[in-house]
Length: 230
Image (tube, rainbow, N blue to C red; front, side):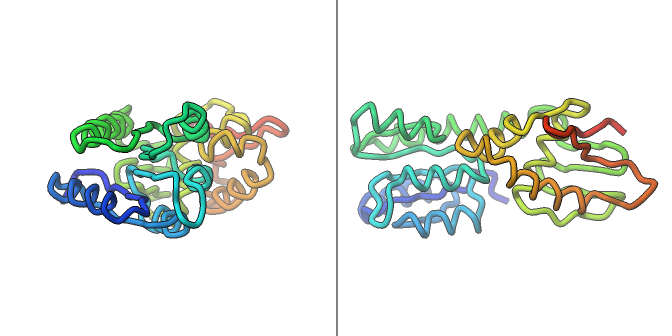
């Protein structure tokens, strides 16, 4: 099994895209490629990449729109690779949720160095705390990306799993609506409480075992949500 992160390469310039792809292949990184924003968003949704290499000058949309869209459901590191050198462009991309900015032309070694930094960040995130969380009949295997209730696997969407992990990582703490939306979707969604309520309602139904059983998600009206220690 390959332990390297899956990389999504979003680049419309074929020679540069091929250069990056060849570099990743020779270093053992699994990758998928997209030459426009629509394909990039589709692949980000379907393949859930660990790292995204993103050009800003795409033929169908600006790369910043891709950042805004994917940040609604993933916090995967995004490294912008762009010919734009203006500080305003860099700041705008970083403010929207990009993690790094590499200016064209770039060296292969510099790109690989940036990737290694993101790889270490991913490893630290995985290894932080216990790989398995248990609370009553609820079990979460963070590394496998699975959750179980009383031994039966829960069929969760990526957003539901992310919400569940956030609550599990803050057991007995009340998390505000703003805190949750910011950590799950990014700052652009921090006031979208109505969408959060919909996702929480569907997640709660999947965790609910009926009357007489404890509730794993408690609502604090007007404030947020809490997972109690069972």
